[in-house]
Amino acid sequence: MRLLYKVADKEILKVRNEIFKEVGIPSLLENGFEFSPFKTSWHGQYDKSSRGYIYDFCRLSPKNNLEQISVYIFGSEKWIQIYLNIYELSPSLDSLAILKDSEGLEFGTPNKISTRMRLRVDDYKGPPLFYMLFLPEHKLGKFYTKDGYFNKVKKLKKLIETDMKNIDCFVKRWHEKFVPNKTDWEGNLLIEVSKS
Image (cartoon, rainbow, N blue to C red):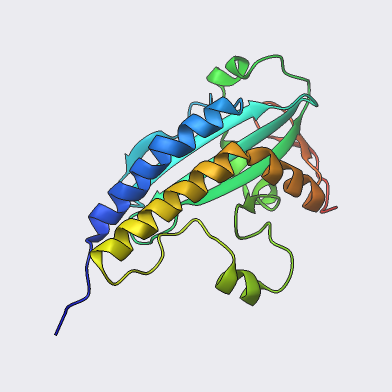
């Protein structure tokens, strides 16, 4: 009897993190994103409490919106979770470097993350069952053989690269669903806007 091919959780975590470092980060940087300047931002450090890696990125849009991407790669699952949120900053900002002395913690409070969109999960239209079964996701799929494992790794890598290169499509989708909350540079809410 042939046994199923097994890969340790630690190895799956390492592979997902390597995928994001190899293709996700360069693609985001090419699209004008930078590592988040806030003091509390994560730049790929290992977080013992979640047993995984966290990345935070930002860019300023031509309309002076702060576009934030947060990436979570946890040891207890097979996902690369990628979230997008957008804020209208007031007063306007010329450079992200101005935010380097800010904590940025307020951007993560519950009333702000209500407009956060998880890529390949929250951006789909239609019944959830359809996209859960048939549409691609940022997850290392099931495998039963060594070849199957390497094929799933390759497939996930290609999807992450494609999606990060085409991040503006997700930004557009975000704007179809939400209107940016107006905040100051620390993330304190000035005007809360409901879903569009």
